[in-house]
Image (cartoon, rainbow, N blue to C red):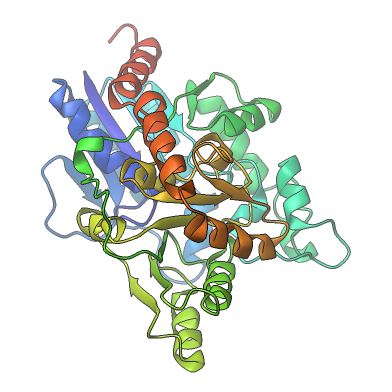
Amino acid sequence: MRILLYNDTYKHIGGAETYCLELLPELKALGHEVKWLAHGEDKPHSEDHIVIPDFNQGKFNYFKSKYFFNKDAYITIKGVLEDFQPDVVHLHHDRYYTFSMLKALKETGIPVVKTIHDYTMLCPSQYYPDLYYDTPGTKSRRENCALICSQGTCLPLKTRLGHPFAHDRKRRIVCNSVLDFIAPSVKLKEHLEKAGFQGVKHLPFFVDEKKWSFNPEREKKYSVLFVGRVETNKGVHILLDAVVELRKKIPGIELNIVGTGSQLEPLRKKVIAQGYEDFVRLPGFVSYENIGVYYNSSNVLVVPSLDMEQFGLIGIEGLANGIAVIGSDTGGIPEWCMHEETGLLFDPEKPEALLPTLERMLLEKGLAKRLTQQGMEMVRDVYDKTKHLEGLLSIYRQSSPAR
């Protein structure tokens, strides 16, 4: 089977890119011909990666890429489809050039499935990651996220007015163009079906344990790790505050914040200004190949998201590596971070609850070891690579039975 994976960015910045990079060689190993198509810099890359330019440039580039058809992108994408002639196209993030991609797919008649990697298809406010505080005159951001409305009622009025013509129109077109939607979490599947999406299938992500070097004897006792986009809605600032406060009880505690984002430099300036440099480190972007160094030197991985986290792939990677995990009780996180079973949860509505949760994980005798062992067993069973690949190939075959 010829399979084309499509993601709108080539740069490895999050879970969608991680998944594509893991999936491609696994499908090839099963005898399929697979390529990954993405937009990015035209630099040397693997022969199974097709990297095409970002076509919209200049003023309003972001808006044009998201909500308007681009002829150059359409022509280029259609050329790739006609040249490779895939049996199925598997869409991932298609925030940009969506209409160009869907038009090319429609004209070539190639079946398409799509993995939903976040809540942006359902919740307009997900495009604005710093809107985690209440907006005057509206309900709270989290209450709206719990409803997954399509009206963006937590957005400023001026921004909200354009969404019926942009966000909702885009969602309708995607729903009419994709045969099957794949939801990695049960919670996301429920919200998609509630919003009218058809053909939604739940297929959990997978972890290949052989790629992670589990180190049961970690050199440090109180090393805390964050991995992900350094944005306000990811909760990294409340994690920093919790670690700073815990330092009064645990002098040896340290925090590594791995990732990049709009809040990286402001956070770095805060760390320097407050004199936290001796126990808080911000290495920025770390390649996927090198992230194991941080896993192996950490005791607790924290996923402190403040709004609806679709899944939190980094959490099951941490569990596979033998790290105790703490997550916020939102979105798909509780599906792998089951409170008192495979990790500890805290209420993101009460960010101050993270501090005692982290303290308990670090200091309560035997807790981290018990939760981690149970978490590793759960990952082996639920997030098994073979099960995932069998399920995915079944979806591909159902989508393109004649090919």
